[in-house]
Amino acid sequence: MLYTPIQFRNVELKNRWVMSPMCMYSCENGMANDFHFVHYGSRAQGGTGLIVIEATGVEPRGRITNHCMGIWNDEQAEKLQRIVEFVHTHSDSKIGIQLAHAGRKGSTWNNHQISIEEGWETIAPSPIPYHPSERIPHVLTTDEVKGLVLNFKEAARRAVKAGFDIIELHGAHGYLIHQFLSPLSNIRTDEYGGSFENRIRFLLEIVESVNEELNAETALFVRISGTEYAENGWDIESSVALAKVLKDYSVDLVDVSSGGNIHGAKISVFDGYQVPFSSQIRNEAAVKTGAVGLITEVEQAEEILQNGNADLIFVAREILRNPYIAVQGSFEMKEECFFPHQYTRAKISS
Ligand code: FNR
Image (cartoon, rainbow, N blue to C red; front, top):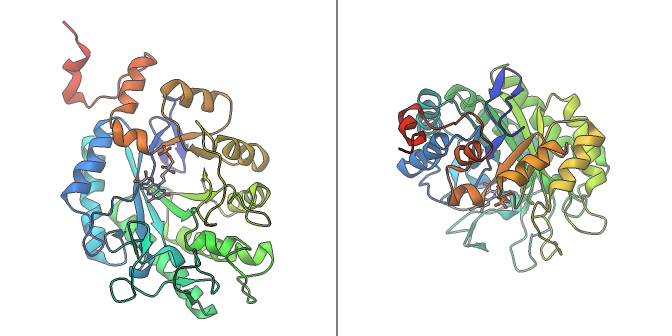
């Protein structure tokens, strides 16, 4: 199944390998440069079905660090467009971008919060820092929340113009959207807090406004944390319920990760440890899902698909180690080889 195509709207992926979004902390002023051109371009040459560009801030405060990617202005989008055009011209891979806002987890370097002068005042649904040693974030007013929805919409408009095939919204890992979802980080009393319906409202408004910018040539994914491993927190039942709603809002795939919102949460990490969350969401909400997390072997990836636990395989650290994992897998599975046509002679050993 790894080499069976799959379609989202009019976007067909040639195989099920996805380069998972990964911050590279290598931008100035949120702009992609030659590092990113080669970094993402080489995964296209490696036969990856879909490449997802790292978490990209929809406004300056939406970045995790000063060196994260941004798409809050046209110049940033033009730099990204160069990568998109390379992938489309020189491969048959597809390319997506993860739109993100760090919220209370912004203004950091090397996983530590930096000062307002070096960074910025962070924002959040409620006055609860991620770690007790951190500054209390600015609590968003209701109007400011609506303003952020517009930031996502504008970012999506730029991404569509740049030619991206997939937009992924970052609703996982304790960043702003996740901060709204969780009753442990969202204790608001307005329409964006309290009940499940209120806590998912920010994400749904973003989905709705982003969808207004999309067309049949651009599909929409949402990454969530299937659970945050905390009592009375966001859990797998909430994720299944959310996934059912997202399906009704024309979200094409739920990319299922976990954790990130509760400091010190106990997580048991092993090969494919998040696959059960993907499986439960896929089977109970009847949505397409992506599995991610310690998937490093071709056979393992194939098994996840065969067992009906996911539709796509997101690979992060292993594809940093091996940009050619998709091509290599196609050799192993004796499938059509996904090398670039220029490399055809590599198939001939004598
Ligand atoms: C990540 N991850 C991540 N996730 C995400 O949704 N957006 C991001 O920008 C990043 N950034 C990032 C940077 C780096 C260097 C790493 C290693 C990871 C998480 C990543 O996409 C993936 O979910 C996890 O790494 C688990 O998958 P692997 O690494 O076990 O395949």
